Structure formats: structure tokens, C-alpha cells
Image (cartoon, rainbow, N blue to C red; front, side, top):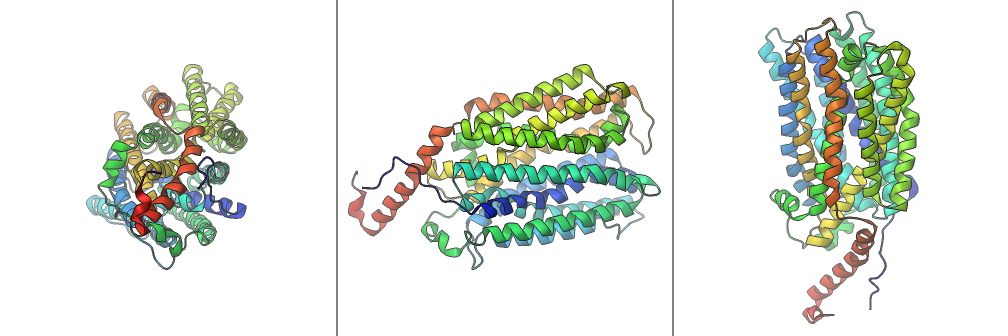
Length: 479
């Protein structure tokens, strides 16, 4: 008789775990470019409306959410001679990079504002399709790579570290680089140069992520699922309504994502009008690296000693507390620069502690769906998470655009108390509320250490029994 008391894990090689972790940075390269410069480029370089720029971001993000379940369903129902996930990663990378060139290349300019909006929106939607395809594989292909809890924590660690290093380097040089050209943010040359950097980063990490997955993403690995029920787009709704782990992870992680997207989009304005020192942004970006490493090491420690749920909650609590301190103290005077940098470093550490767990937990939720409801659907699970995540975080575009309209923003606008408070609330206050919502939601997250071990002890045995029943109906009698 099969022993179901111990979990059965499939594992990847250590280098494969690290290399696949880089796929998140491959897509973040373009996300950093869009999040940091898209609105600024529209308002300062193209002289378009800040409110309309915010609406474009919001509507495009909604479109991004709609494409998620379509691509997730496509992934789950596709097995090619090159596997299930690798074709989507490569095609996504190609579309992402072409989209970056079209958006930030400065090759096409129209005299009509209407035509300029049409062009920008079209290019942005094109880019989103590629971004969705490659990002979906970050969340779903990990299920095929490994289900060992320690390896998933290790993968989450390297995913967070590599991405955080990239973000720190990007923010550390890109804003000052673009602003350093004659005309500052009105000059398209800086945007184009930084876009080329983002393309190079994407190609580098995509190559190694595809290589890492090649051994595990083979067509014969999916033979046991060929006779399963075909996955449909409507399964997104079933997963949301019948998978408690998915419900709580979405509610918690999406509010944290809203905070991080807002902080990226509002950063330039925050340091100009609230902190009133744009130069300190680069220092904080670089000084944030030690905090990020501390946060990630603590995340691995808590995940291994307790579980990923505890690790996420500790990080979210700390991020909320340090955010409240910044709101109360407001250490933006030059004499308080060290205090401000220290608090921001702590926010970075706490955010890293929480966020490191999200991608591995999506893999856990996909396996939970397989265990609870019998569906091997990592693509639709990952993209369903992304769909709701984007619907919630799409509010960032409206918040930024609405804030710009509220303060009457114009290129080169002078400082005002209204701008000071507006960007302080957007950058710090709204994320604090998001963290509070995350903490409340996670009370009901069902996957702890005991559940995890039970899942992986039972799933292989269930599948072996189902295969035996198919070959010999007599095997269906109660064991």
C-alpha cells in the first residue's frame, strides 16, 4: 500500500531555481520603465493632460486584467513540442520589448493630441499583451519547476533579491539620467536610452529563465493531465468563489500591490513637492538595498521556521507601522535627512519581507486548487490572481491622475502646501491603509505548514488511484 503520511516533492537543481527567479525581473524591467516614466513622459514630454494620463493607465490596466484569464486558459490547454510555458515566455518577451520601443522610442509624434492619445494607448495595449503572457509564466511555471517548500522559499528569496537589486539600480540612475538631458523630462532622448536598458535586462533574464525550465517543461510531463477537463475562462470565477486560499491571497496581496504601484508612480512628484529634494531619491534607492536584504533573509527565516503566511503578516505589520511613523513625524527637513532615510530603509525591509512570499504562495494556491478541486490549472490560477490584483491596483492610475488634477499640476509647477500633502498621502498614507486591509484579509488564509504537508502527501496518491480506476474500474471500491 502506498504511504500517504509523507509529502512527495519534486525538486529542481539549485541553479535552475535561481535562473527561473530572474523571469520576474525580466518583466519588471518594462514595468519599472512604465511605472516611473509613463505619466511623466505624457505630461512633460508630450504635454498631455495628467488626468487623461491617469485614465489611460487605469483603462489599460483593466484591459491587462481582461487578457489575464484568456492567456491563463490558453496556457493550461496548450502543450507544444517545446512544452507548455516556454513558448509564452519567449513570445511575451518579444512583444514587451517591441512595445517599449514603440512607447518610449520617440519615433512617432502627431500634431493632433487626439492622434497622439490613440497612438500611445494602442502601443501600451500591445505591450500589455506581452507583459501578461510572460508574467503569467512567472506565477504558473513554478508549479512545474518545484513544489518543495524550501525550494519555493529559496526561489521567492532570489526572485525578490534580483528584482529589488534591479529596482534600486533603475531608480538610482534612471530619474537623474533622464532629467539630466537638456530640457529635462521634456527631452525624449533620455526615455529612449533607458528603454534600451530595460530591453537588454529583459532579454538577459528571459534567456536564463527559459533555459532553467527546459528540463521540466517537456510535453511528456503533462501526459497525466491530457484527459482532464478542459480549462475554461469561466473557471476564473469558480476558482475565486470556491478557493479560500485564492480569495484571501488576492485580498491581501492586491492591496499591498496597490501600495507599491502608487509609490512607484508618485515617487518623482513626492520627492519634488513633499520631500523637496529630488537628489535624495537616488540615495534612498541605494541605501534601501541593505534593508531589502535584511527583509528577504527574515522572510526565508520566518517561512522555514513557521510558514509563508506568518512571514507575510510580519512584513505587512512592520511596513504599516513605519509608514505611520513617516506620516506622523514627517522628517523632510534637511536636518532630519538621516532619520528619513532610516525610516525609508525600514519600509523597504518590511515591504521585502512581505512581498517575497507572494509569488511562491501563488504556486501554493495552484496546488491547493489541484488538491481541493482536482484541477491542474496553474495558468488560470496565476492569471486569476493577476486579474483581480490588477483590477484593485488599477486604482493607482486614477489616484495619481486625480491628484494631479486636484492640485492643478503643470510642467515645472511651483511648490504649494496642497501639493505637499497630496503627494504625502498618495505615497505614504494610502499604502498604510492598504497594509491594514492585507492584515485583516489574511486572518482567513488556510494554507499553513500542516496543510502544505498534507496536500503534497495526498495529491500523488489520489492521482495514482484515479489512474488505476481508469485502467481497472474495480479499483474504485473504497480503500
